[in-house]
Length: 429
Image (tube, rainbow, N blue to C red):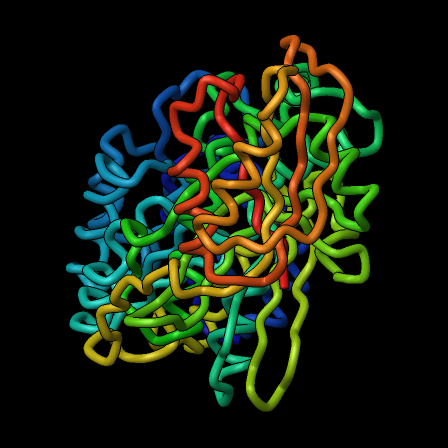
C-alpha cells in the first residue's frame, strides 16, 4: 500500500459535501481499488460557519481559495466552485503550473479554456481530469476517451441537461405548460432560481463542446455551438409530437459536416423507437456512434451530490493509480481547430409550429413560403384556438436541406398573419 493521495478541496456545496461523504463511506473499498488511501487535507469555501452536515474540523481550512494550489501537503486540487473564469480558473491555472493534479466538475471553464488547461497539464506532466463535468455520474468521458479510443466517431449526441428533461417529460406526462412545470421544478430543486443556463441550452452546450473535442480530436469550440432552449415549447407541441409518434427532448448533437464540425443544442422530436425517447425525469443519456463498435449508449443520473461526487472520486482513484493520459483523448498539440460546419447543407426533417390569425389566406401564405424555399411538406395539421386567440398550425417536412427551412421562415418573418414567433424543432434521424 502506497502513501496517501492528499487532496485539497475547493468548494463545499452539494457536490463538495458529497465527495467528503463518499470518501468516508467507501474508504476501505476506495483504498483497495486505488492501491493507496485518498485523504482530504485542506478545504476552502466562501462561508466557514455554514453547517454542511459533515465534520470539517479534521481538515485545514484555507480562506484564500487560490492558495490551495500551493498548499504544501496536497498532491491534487479538486475544484467544485463553478464559473468559467474568476477564482476557479485562477485555481486551475496555478495548480497545473505548479505540477499539481487537478480534478474539476466545471463544464463552463473547460468549454471556454479547456485547450489552455490541457496544454498546461501536459507541460507540467500533471493530471487534468473532469469526468464530473459532463453527465454527472455517467462515465461517458472515460467511455469515449478510453473505451472507444480505437474508433472513428461519426456522431455523438444526447440529453445533457436534467432540468430540461425533467420539465419536458413532466409536460408530456401531465399535459401541463412550460411555465407551470418550471415553477414546480424550481420548488423541487431541479431548477435554479434563475434557470436561464439550463432552459436556454447553455449548460448542455458547454457539455456538448467537451464531448465533441474528445470524440473528434478537435479543440473545444463552445462559440461554434448553435444553441436553442425549451422555454417556447408548448404542451400542444408535445401532444402533437406524441400523435405523430415522437417525444420532445432537448438534444445536443455533434458530427462532422461540410467545412468543419456541426454542433447544435436544440429541442428535437425523437422517434419512439429511439432510446432517447425513453429517457425521462432528470436522467441524462449520451449516444456515440463508432465505426467499429457501433452505437454506444451511456445513461444514468446526470446531476446530484452522489452521482457527481462518484465521478470526482473516480478521477481521484485514477490519479492515485497513476492512470491518466491526455485530457481530451490525444495530446493537446494534436487537437485541431474544429471549424464550423455549414448547417444549411445538413439534411433532415423538421417540425414547424405556427400560431396564426384565424382568417382566410393564412394557409396559402405559409404554403407559398414553403414552396418558394423548396421545402416539401409531409403533413400539415391545424388545431383549434390557442390560448392567445390564434390558431395553431403544425407542419412536418420531408427530408431536405436545413437551409430551405431557414429560408422559408425568413420569408414569413414579419407576416401580419403570424401571432408570435414560429417554433422549429428538428427531427432526430
